[in-house]
Amino acid sequence: MSPSATGPHVDETGARVVGEVGLLEYDDCQVSAIHGLRDIFRVASEYAVESADPPSVIRVSTWAVSITDDGPVMVCTSDTHPELPHRLSHVIIPPSLVVPELMTSVSELTDWLVGLRSEGTTLCAVCAGVFVLAETRLLDSRDATTHWAFAEELARRHPKVRVDASRMVIDDIDIVTAAGILAWVDLGLTLVDRMLGPSVMLHTARFVLADPPRRRQSLYQEFTPRLQHGDPDIREVQTRLHACLHEPHSVEHLAQTAAMHPRTFQRRFKEATGLTATEYIQAARIAKARESLELTNEPVAQISRSVGYLDVSNFRRLFQRATGVTPSEYRSRFGIAARVSHQEDLPTGQPARIRSTPSR
Image (tube, rainbow, N blue to C red; front, top):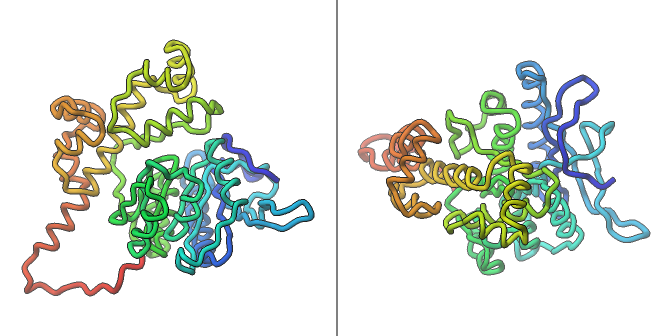
């Protein structure tokens, strides 16, 4: 059965199905990641059924290539809610247990992923699984992370991808990549946070004895744009915006790229996303700035320019209006990079934590 990407279902118990996560099985993939992600989403769903209002669950299905008389096709091999039609909100490509040089390209996977992405499905990949996603060309001109040992190879094969192996998870809303071979834990918790909220995510992290995702979630409402609205022209504009937030974007230029009259474009954009184009751009830029403040020690002025605000004072004003705090105050409360730098500067007489080669 071919999945479609649309709104939430209600299951037979009355719980709201907030999304369907499809786990992709392919040759030499890390099967333990598939089982582990199933467990994370199950723990989260069982807690959310008891604590959320309304009771909510995450549907989980697995997908693989099957050889038929008509050729290879994608089929569902397991499903927590088989009584419901498929509506994939997210797909996760798990790590590979072989190095990228030995991974085989499967056109059926590429075509399937491209088709789902055109319907608004969020695509996620972990470690060497990012190479499978990169084959679709959907990562071109986008930020992506992977295992540090594979970063150079990813950049060589796909020079249009902006590879940043310093980050554990890069969440660009419609595309999410995670770094190491065990970073599926971080990715799974990130998606739990997105679909069921921070309280359920923290409970799940404690239950499975895992640290919360490295990308610290703020106390403020996250920007979660609508992608599954059924307007492919507007979704294409959204994709371009997220890939190029640092560039200037006027309504007239966006309308021109979408081949629409400005008034038609503004109407359709608002109907699809719930925001005007100007509001949407500002929200996306502030969300990206918050991530940089959390994860880097870059100066505020540099972050301002990287998200398209050349006037730093204007950026500070807009940021405070959106979050309630200044960029510096936000960093002091939620910045991870600053804390890491502080720990590295501690006196050498203090006991050191010994870590093996990073696994996530």
